[in-house]
Length: 110
Image (cartoon, rainbow, N blue to C red; front, top):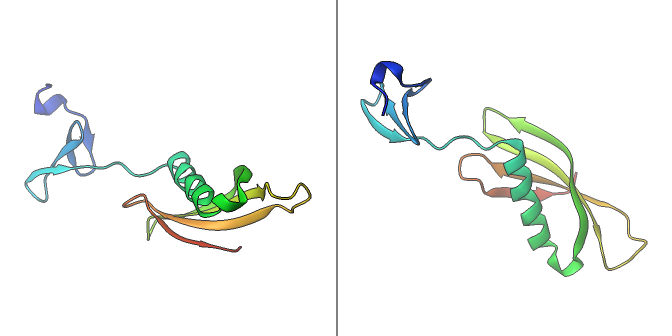
């Protein structure tokens, strides 16, 4: 391990792997890095596939996104085609994913 003077500094304190020394708390705390867009899309796609499993969605993909940094929530527009009918129109849903616990908060129509 590097001496404290050579440790990378994070806004919370000094990095010690996934554990950070917090100057304000004066103790070691576990730091869980935030969710990036790719991780949020993966969570949203899996949820859509589970939610609409009876329709066997195909061509599930991201159509648009918005990140709310005050609430730490991703709002992702996920589109898919139900496989039951070859002539079915594309369906879009807005999926809200919490960055804090990586869970889906809601699914709604755009």
